[in-house]
Length: 371
Image (cartoon, rainbow, N blue to C red; front, side, top):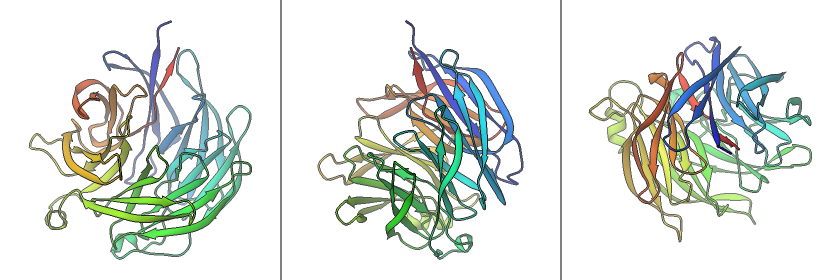
C-alpha cells in the first residue's frame, strides 16, 4: 500500500502574545519532498510549541500567553492525517508556555513555562487526551548577568534522556542546565543537579546522543555550543568542550536584530549536529543552518560548516524519519520548506517543497508515515 507522510506545523506570535494562530497539516511526497497543504486548525491558541506522542496517535500544543497557560490535545486521523480537537487543560499559575514534550511511555505531557518558572507534568487518559496536572516543579532561584535575564529562572526546554528517566532543562535566564529525575509511573519530578555555562550565554535547547551519554547544548545569546557528558552515577552533567559558532566580537559589533541560535538536532545517523541561527545572513538574505561533525570515539565537536535555510529566521527544523529530507520552519518567511538531505556527505540541498502559513510559521513537529 502507498505510504502517506504528514507534516504538522505550529505557529505563534511573540510581539504581544495575544494573536490566535493556527496549526497546519501538510501531506508530503516521500520521494520528491513536495508539500501540499491539507488542513488549518485555529482554536485561538498561540502555539509556542507542538509535539506528538510516540504512538503517532496524538498531537499536543502549548498556549503561549502572558499571565496564563494551558495545553491542548488532538487525535490524529489515521487515514487522512487530519487533527481532531480533544481537550484543553488549564495549568494553574502558568505563564508564557515555551516547550512541550511527551514521556517515553506516552502517559505524561511535560510543559516548560518560561514566565512562571515552572515545569508541569500532566497525565493523559486512555485516548491520549490531556487529563490532569500531576506535578509542578518550580525552578530554584537564579539569574544571569545581562539585562534580559533579570526576570528570574526561565526554562526554555524539557529534554528527556533516551530512557525517559532523566530530564535536562536549559534555563535561559540563569545560565544553567538543570538535571531532574522523572518517575514514569506517577509523573513526579525531582531536582538532582545543575551545570552552569558562562554568564550571559542563555541556554536554549539541548539534544542527547543515541549513546545516552553525550549531551549538546546551544546558547541563544552566546551563539555557542557546549558538550557535556552525563555521569549517571553522580547524576550530573560534566562539561567537556565549548565552541563559538561566531566570534564574540562579531556578535557584539553586529548591527540590527540580535544574532541568536534557534534549534539543535542530530542527523539521523548521529554523525553530525545541525544548528539554526537567526539574523546572520548570507549575501542573498537567507539565514543559516550550521553543521558540526561529532567524533564517533569521544564526542568532540569539529569542522563547522554552514548552509542556507532558504528563508528568514529558522526557529525550528527536523529530519524526516527516513533521513531523506530536512523540514525547516522559516518564521519570518511565513513558510515551512523541505530540503533534500544527502546522508553520505551530511549536506543540505535545494528546496523540494514549501507551504505558506498566515504568519510566523515557527516550528515543525516530527512527521509521521501512515501505511
